[in-house]
Structure formats: structure tokens, C-alpha cells
Image (cartoon, rainbow, N blue to C red; front, side):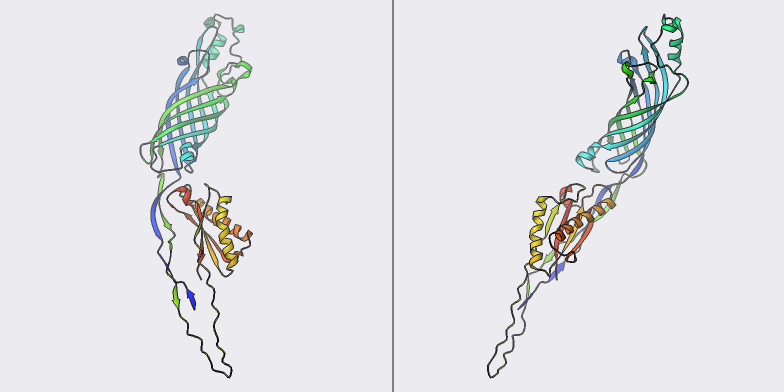
Length: 369
């Protein structure tokens, strides 16, 4: 007898999913600035503002260009006297969403905690108060040549480089609008406040700002995901061949056909990957070894390897990632003695298998004869 296996295929299933969409945004903010100096905390506060325009490239990373500033003030010590000056600072910041880094992106999440680092160019001007205190003995009670607190005095308009660090928290009111609270610290050369710090210490200017972040377009996109259809196996169908004919000869000879051994069906095997990875761990390799043994025992059999990725990040990136995962499994088979012509490796792109962990998968399926 000959055994043959009848297969039927179910249609692929589709579902709608929400994914992140890169977008531009504008971010106006106002608040209070603080410059470290020789006076009480409350006497060193000044108004501050910031306006930024940026691009959110992915759920994790963004870039913004903006301008901040207004006014800052400090105090000389002997005798105590306040002086003010103005500044505008051009900033370029790289932002990182800590919420999405730790928990992954979700369209339903309202809160977002972020950090940033950047550089700036500080344009300082109207330093008239410091110049007046340094050059007017009557206002200080100290001869002008002895008033040496302003060892780094400047006038006119000056440019200073700046480094920036900070973080903030946002609460989404809608898909495009979020309220935010941000802290940033700006480090500048010692000359910025006209005074020389101990050992030429750098000057620090800090801001606490509240504002609104407005997306200039949609921040989410709806996509249709096609999930691979499961293979439904039917029971083996037995087909009887005609019985061999026995021909009477002077010496009767009965001809019989040899029984052909049927290879058993190979079960589907799934190997899983960590986020953004194509490396096979030893635990997952153990799942592949029985498949390699099966293919060596039955050299006429072929397998298909389908790679998948979770829905985090860009769709194009996930397509490439799923293809590399399928190729990683194919390379393991060829390295273990299986000819590449017996393996079909293909990336299927994004999928949702119930969780991000289960969606980062490569499935090894037997190709039926």
C-alpha cells in the first residue's frame, strides 16, 4: 500500500492594530530660572521661557531645536548689591522617552517621562548693572581700583557655549496635545556672570518650566496585520493499489512490492528572540536539533522558516528584522549539515501573538510533498 496525506489550508486572518507614527511638534514653555550666586535662593530667581520645534522619530528618540532665555541675576558680596543681565540661548537637544524604553510604547498610555541632553549657544547682553557696580565707587563704598569682584567683567553682547541636561514629565490630553513640566540645567563658562569662581568653576543656570507640547500631525497610525493561517492536517487517506498478478510458470513466482516506509510528520517548532535581536540562545537551539536530525534521516523532506517581529518601532525596520531572524535559523541548519536548497527562509514582518515576547519568533514548518 501507499500512504498519502491530504492537506487543506485555512485563509489568513487579519486584524487592525495601532502603531506609532513619526511626527513634528512645537513646544512653548514658561517658568522660573535660577542662577547659583551669593544670596538667598529667592533673590536669585528670574523669569524664563523656552520655545522649541522638534521631530519625534520613534517611540524612544526625538530631536528638538529651540530658543530659551529672558533674564538672570546675581549679587556681589562686598557690599551686597544686585545686578541683572539678559540672554537668549539657541539649543539643540536629543530626547529619550524613559517610559517607552522601560515598558514599551502603548497608544493608551497618558504619562511620559523623558530625559534629554544637548548643546547651546548663549547670547548674553545688557550687562549694564555689573559694569556700573564695577566702575562707580559711590555705589559700593569701595574705590573703583579695589572693587575686584568682577574679575571677568564683560560688556556689549557676548557669545558663550553651553551644555545642557534635563528631564521632564508629560500628560497627554489628546492624541496631539500634552501638558508638561520640565527641568533643565545649563553649564556655561566661568565668565558668564562677570565674576571669577573658585578655581575657575563653571557657571550654572537652571530652569523649571511648564508648557504644552502640540503635535503637528497624527502621532498614531492604524495598520492591518495579516497573521499566517494555521495548517490543518487531515487524517491519512489510505489508497489501495491493485494486488500484484501472480503468473503461473513452470516454477510459480509470486511478485510482491516492497512496503515503502512513510516518514512521520514533523511538528511545528518555534524559537524566540529578545527585543531587536537575531541571536539564537542555547535554549532555543535545543529546539532546532530534533528538526536537523529529522532532515538528515529523511533527505527528501524540506522545511520553511518564517520570521516575525513585534509591532514596536517602524514597520520597515520590523520587516527587515523578521527576515534576519528567519535567515539566522537557516544559517544554523546549514552550519549543521542541512543543504540550503531544502530550506525556505522568509520574513513575515510585524505580528501579534498575544505579547511582544511571543511575537519575536521564527516558526519552522515542514513543507509537504
